Picture 1 (tube, one colour):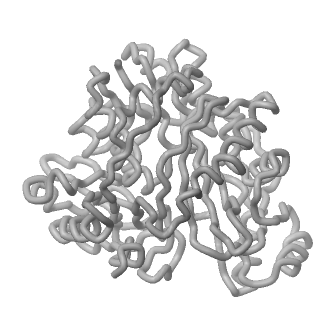
Picture 2 (cartoon, helix red, strand yellow; picture 1 turned 60 degrees about the vertical axis):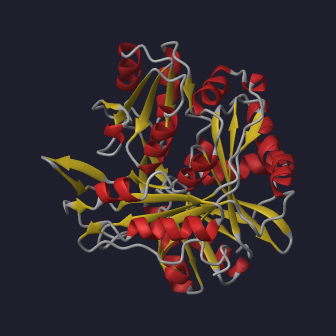
Length: 432
């Protein structure tokens, strides 16, 4: 099987690593990729938001499967363009990807499917913002309706900060279509605050059959103790020893399957990866948000524990034959990922700094720990930083304590001037 992966972050490196270990994969390509992905896949320059360009590349490579990693290409309709030339694609259509592209759309789908979620208001004016903030009170939860790379959410007890973020959301004007038409002013989604721990649960679906993966938990705040600004994610772990063993079955019955069924009923079947961000509240499970693709950094720990070869599962989902797939097989090992970020992330990260110690990790920590590249590029013989989140250091172990020890041992070998990482990933879950 020839596989083309679209994207260039640590999520795509994790996908490419798993696909490279699959004996059914005879050729692996990635566009545009990064310095680390180049070690396991052939890279191709492409504008990942240009569906026609991606489709032409897939056709030229005679790909048997295209896997779209990031959310922006999905919302831009790249999966539709690939399917239009007759190549199976793992990733939802442009319409179905609005489940992530528009939080207002997601709320409407959840209402139709009777999925439990936070009460919310969709606001387009300052007056509506003030009414919504007053209705819910502190702590305030304000979200940009569109894509914001995981950083468009503000949770705060400060009314002025909440109002300022909401006003910024509604004042933004976005490109509505690829033809260049401009949408009306943006929208802010203001929600009630959900108490309790958060869980990420992925599910692979062909639009009818839904196959859940193993739960994970990520860490959004930049600093230890869940302090600092929101980020795209600073680390993750799996499994969740504190979670109810019946959690996956409950989420399947009340969230994942009803959502897939509702989208199919609306004529917009969802084929790909459905990501449910959940809060385990005092009133039960509630959906915080949906994503239309593998999450980052949760993918790194989930795939580290997946024993089943990945390619056939994704191909069956793309072809509408997921019901033919046998049950997934999981390793008993635990997995922990620690993100190494650039100086000043998530504001304006510094880039271009050389990264050292990668060979040391490969020589001294493999196979239990390894480095997945996110924001990197090759500069001559050196690998340098090229983004905010630079590396995802992933490790496995017999339990979370051992996986965590191995992950941080590997992090300690990496040298990147001014870099930052959290020191408390999985600490509480590991009982430390």
